[in-house]
Image (cartoon, rainbow, N blue to C red; front, side):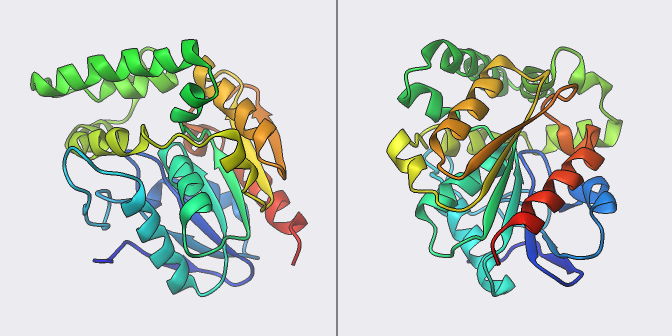
Length: 263
């Protein structure tokens, strides 16, 4: 593994935080501010974001590269961590859970987006919502539209979400558009079926925003239904960007998840 962003603090059960697309480890700061000091906290960025280099090929990337970097991070941690993962980070955490070399103690999946799950389980109307958006997004990227990635943000958060973001955040989203395209092209072929999800045996908390996109609401239900040790938590007033909008609620869920896990 070429290298990866890594920051660690505290002592106690290890908790690894994986951000989503357009995000870095710093995106968890508000959640960590509410978490408390009883945990060994590790933050990182996924491939192409923050200080983690991009190693995926252009055009035919798979989740294998993301899985490898998560394995490398866990090897550095030196013990199976609880993995708290948002959005595409949640997809990466799921891919790692079913094919990674290093085990984890548990999963907290916050608005995880394994869209291929919808297709393989026959939820084709919900799957089509993703494909319609990505088709337009990729066409706008190909045409050179600078703010094309705003379409992704608004898909998850609702119209106007991108424009309402701070200027620095919008600039980072635009700057990492090509990385996000690799996220989509590598993540879409990941299509875990029910049998694959049943192989995930660690305690799992599936978190969704109650005001989120209908396809995301359905993904959360399918994860809850098919992962044996999963529970489903809905943050009623939340949408997709829960680490920013509901950090205290997420921190409480992480504490509950870790503290209740078998030792």
